[in-house]
Amino acid sequence: MKTLTAQVGNVCIGSDYPIAAQTMCNTHTYNVEETIAQCRRMYEAGSKLIRITCPGLNDVPFMKEIHDSLRAEGIDTPIVADIHFSSETAIAVAPVVEKVRINPGNFHKDHDEACRQFSRLVVVCKEHGTAIRIGLNHGSLGARITDLYGNTPLAMCKAAMEWLELCIANDFYNVVVSLKSSNTIVMVEAYRLLAKAMEERGVVFPVHVGVTEAGNGDSGRIKSCVGISALLSEGIGNTIRVSLTEDPVNEIPVAQYLADRYDGVLRSSMTAVRIEGKCAEATYDAPSREKLLLDFSCDFGKRLLDKELDEVKVKGCYRDENGVCVDVVESGLAEYLEDELMQATRRRFYKPEYIACPGCGRTMYDLQEAFEAVKSRTGHLKDTVIAVMGCIVNGPGEMADADWGYVGEGNHKVSIYKGKEPVLRHVPDTEAVDRLVELIESSQN
Image (tube, rainbow, N blue to C red; front, side, top):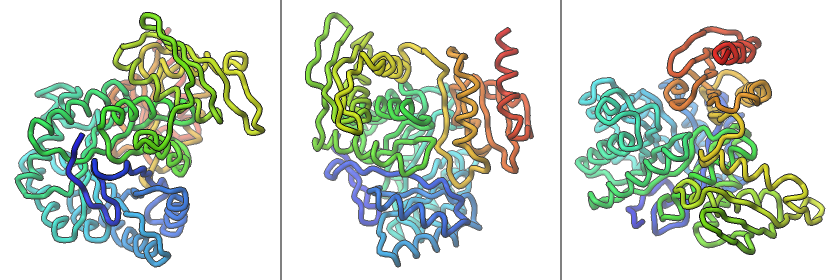
């Protein structure tokens, strides 16, 4: 898809340039030294952009200090300020970073006032050469749009197009746009609708692609590859993030794999495929378990999402850390990967579906530890969607598909949600997992 180009510091984002892999800090922004240290590791791992949360006006001086310190070290990776709700914070931080990520609909409940505040931000960004990412997520669209279109991929597309039209009206084109969801079907459909709408409009902005709150481990990687590869294979996507509930540096190799694959640098390790009806059997000779997992997800995720196939079987081998060939069927890996891919594409569920944000500077508890505790206690609840979210700011909105939610409040307290409604608040984090499991199990009896 031919797009405009966004200039983000020394990185160009658009169809004329390589896909840019990025990640986001999960440190507290006020902890300047810790954030700088994490940025340094991200830079060394090859991240092309680094996003840092800027929760309020008090954090703007910290953002400037982090930015200036990195530049003094010779680290020129563009810094993206992540803003929620406060247009004043966005306006204040825009001069000291290369890009600002916002959801303009959150600036004010009144749409006209939100538009006015967004236009003020555009003026500042034009003055300082700062790019904007308009980032809308499923579950945080606001009542005005969802009353018109429901909480749907179409609503996500319509909301994004409203803000892009305002950019055009303000003669501002240094813009990237994203529509994320933890549901791979919703995410892919939303981006496809957006791509079509921009092409019909005749102004195609570059696109940031990602599956939000993908989780961790193999599941998070497979789910991310399914959604992102489906779009990149269609030419949709110019910069990507793989959101994992892990050390954010771990996101970069997966994102770079996707970038390299769809820039034509990498090839799949699949050596043969046989298709009968809507069932495929693929054979691999992979240099590692990780490469097999990523290749398999990209080779067949889109076909399962689009229901071109109903079943995929995998065989062949991969090399372990000692270079020994491991048979994927005999080792049991084949069945596991098949189950994981079917779950990621939402064709068949063999375990609970987990939604978990990667964490950021707004997270006030040990998110990774909590997520592992929730998973270890709920693995038997295979028909349940459970969300583990880092903060109350956007957690309830982002877990749009969840049956149950575990949301950090700060001060070692947690809120537990059933659907979109809080059923328990201010639960000590030492008790919260027990209370969550009790509520889920009692509701199923």
